[in-house]
Length: 345
Image (cartoon, rainbow, N blue to C red; front, side, top):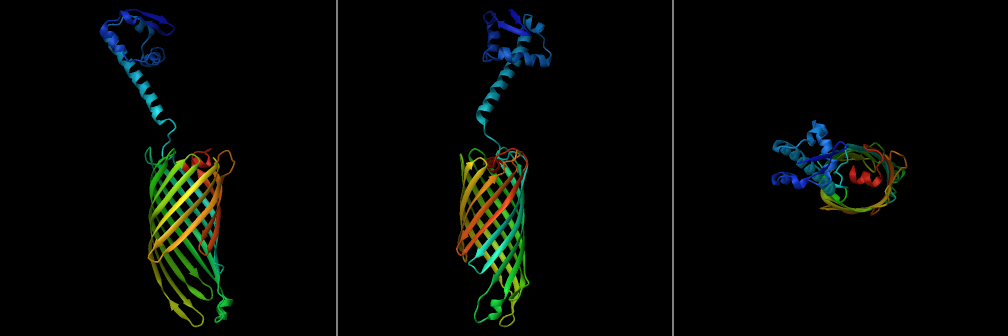
């Protein structure tokens, strides 16, 4: 057998003059690998051109052919991996987080209104190629004011009552996601609220705990995201207050509620950095039956890092309207668009 050198490796292998068993050793090796792959492999493990030029005995052929088979197999597997997973991203792009600060105003049928200041933070971590885990914490301060116009109680008409409520909540979610298709996950969350009403007509305190477990699912359709959120919520509120008009009366009621909720939501991205959204959620149970709708928009600010977005939402329910707005800061990989933040972080 004869090898003809060309440059740092061989150019031509006289395949026809090899023995049949030697030919079989080279069957299946990609044609392009003979020039592009061998030199890199041989040079890394110490082979030289001179070694390749010498007539090969059976031991030399076994070593070289084994290396060629390994290289060609790795090359084929690499190409196959690229074909199967090209463009498919993991459930979570990497360790990332968000901080949200906002304000909300709600009007209750003209006799009461609330001013809500809130903040939230979350951290998302990849658990596997298709699984992610998210942790949430939030806090809020709500100031509810109402007034009465009761002819028989002029003192009540002259009074304006204010109740302040502070809330802290925790939550976690485990989800499967393919950023090209959608996601499905489970969420568990709980919150504790404490309220104080120091004003004239009703004076007292209240404490409330809430907990919920729900399933969420989303489908990604190019520039549209469709979502479902369904679960069950438990709420218990204990109050202690006293009326001053017409006579002093102490009341200590406890309210316990256990009910279901189902919500549908959709987001349409007019561009990669601007989306409009809407949702409808219905809650129902033994003493619960109401529906809430929202409509809003979110925009990523045009900074190079693309890590700050602003949002605004309108809230609509029977005898209730409201609005909330705020700013959201993203941490993690920079330069991502809004739609990428929503589907990959």
